[in-house]
Amino acid sequence: MPGQPRYVGQPRHLGAVTLAVALALPAVGAAGTGAPAAAPPKCSAQQLTLSWAGTGTAKRGGTGNQDTAVVRVHNDDRMSCTLMGYPGVTLKAKAGRDTETLRETPRAKPRTVTLGPGKDTTFTIVFLSEKEEPRQAIEPNKVDITLPGISKPVSLEWTWGPVTRQEAATHPGNYVGAVGSPLEP
Image 1 (tube, one colour):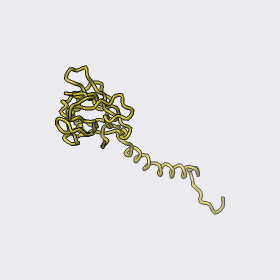
Image 2 (spheres, helix red, strand yellow):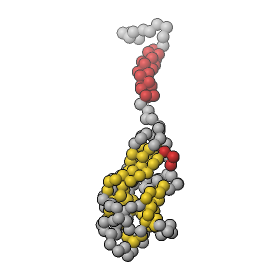
Image 3 (tube, helix red, strand yellow):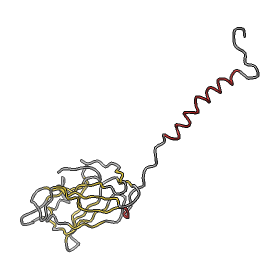
């Protein structure tokens, strides 16, 4: 064609293909580096230690109010892991047969919590404490806690006194929050 440059020994479309490949190369290299890392695995019972956090409103022996006890979940492992959901919480009396199982509260929505090595997260137990003569109460000496995704419960000593029974209540005053979600009564 007159007025158009002529490419000798090279088809016209090859120039466009070469340009397209040259533009694509940097994008291919960047795509490999921008991929997110795989999420850490779910936590196992062997990785975690439970203890009372020392925060909350609960007092040794009871207060007669609705109180909070905060449980610390510590990752003892050298690898990160994840937890999501509500722990199972059952108060147990000295005889072992008398129990009170706490319900989950919809006010604290579960989210995935990543626990790095040596790091902590918490969850809150809210309960109706009895101080005076307990009438409709359980007098627990321990609490069994089953973390989400873990089948074996861990027992902690319960020192917060008698707890008003709420298992049959429509709107119970005893409940547990999601792991990693702060919760107030």
